[in-house]
Length: 120
Ligand SMILES: [Zn+2]
Image (cartoon, rainbow, N blue to C red):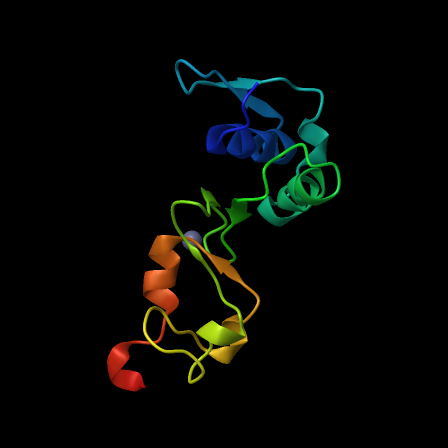
């Protein structure tokens, strides 16, 4: 089984709400037994992160957006805010406020949270 973005989103939803997604219809199926887990997006992603980094069962390029909490594929979108992306240390591209250092953002949150050009 190939681990896709949808797979990782499904694992997260399973940990949060105890539901599975039917691949063909996107219908949610309540599987009941784990609804008591009732995890937040961050708690669910903490488990996914261990499956990525420790057991290598899930590719590491799936990330949780620090702001909107959507899981996205970092191969095709998003940004990690490291020291090079904190103003004024970088040139070009998105630049962020220092309080966002160390966070992952999907494209739409990065667009919204990056420092507007005129403020620099
Ligand atoms: Zn986001």
